[in-house]
Image (cartoon, rainbow, N blue to C red; front, side, top):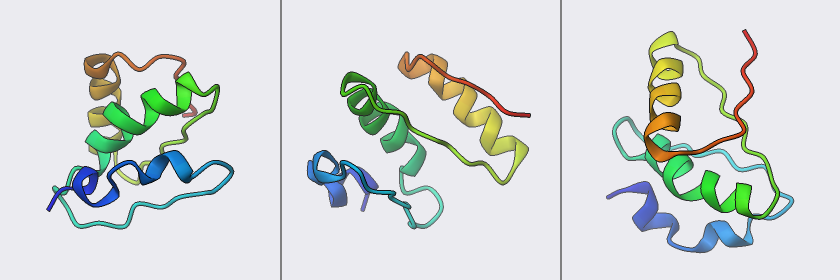
Length: 77
């Protein structure tokens, strides 16, 4: 089961909430966050914060940001 299948359109009701996606490895968290939620949030004038605990995840997110065309990215090193 993919994260996007479980969440459906419920993310549109998350306004003003902090949401943590706690799903197992390989369930589509990053894909959902970048491809669906980030685009929606940016169109609503909102921001999305990605916290990475590993360099490889940070690299994956940066590469996917380019792939999905999500803009307005700030990076803290």
